[in-house]
Image 1 (cartoon, one colour):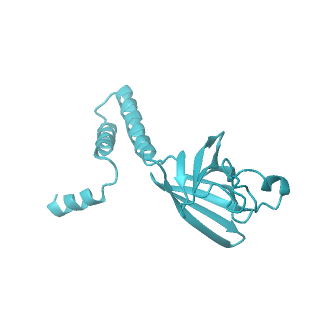
Image 2 (cartoon, helix red, strand yellow):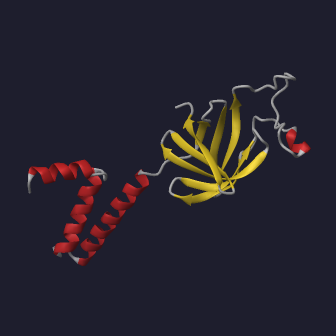
Length: 180
């Protein structure tokens, strides 16, 4: 092998070396037939475990408190059943400037819901897993009192992409993990 080949492979290597070594050893044992049937089965299990471990290492947790892109709210996200829930837990302006009272969901078109406090307000509904590190459902926008089709994607350990759509018109923002 040439030095260029080795260096190019090192740059492209995205699988942790311990996983690659375990996979290589298991494949060699299976390929060359030097092992008994029981040992071959054990080598196959080792190979599958190494590959599954590499995939799981890339999963990111959505659980935690996230700061909105504007920095005006923090939303606590966690699992509720098979879905995820997100509730407002902090506001930069927690009181209504006109009344001095705690901020309410005043833009909600339903008068009964317009009186509920902003702190504790649920933002997600039906947010179910729809892919790796991704959930889809609906998101409530307290700025206009409307609910939109939405997806939430963990893009890194500290970054969450939140998108919403009305028909073909979509928009989104990136939230950052708070308090780490």
